[in-house]
Length: 155
Image (cartoon, rainbow, N blue to C red):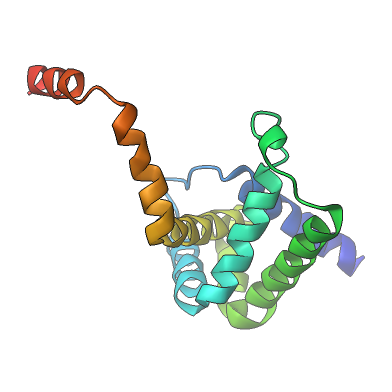
């Protein structure tokens, strides 16, 4: 019975995390506390676990799956690592904050808090110099004059 209750509690959080849904504008104080705990007490290595898992899951999307090949054993390891991280963060690292958030704001608070952690981890990923350089390569294919014209017309 306890495992079923835990699964019922965590399933919405995992689905929210997987979908990377936007964080609700009206997050409560307890959700904010849980978010702050997750962001401040998660190490860079743990954020890398989250990013690896997110990338692995997103790579299954048909729009990109043909460009990415993650061996089944590696995908399984990403899932195991993320499950352990998720469990540790909620049952040890931020246990008190998680319990208060769920008690007063419902299980959706967990998904919203992990969404914030995912956003922070993603920002760290994109701040890597190699990633930033790859993103900047887009500029060479854009017509800067057209962009300047439309932006100055909007002012």
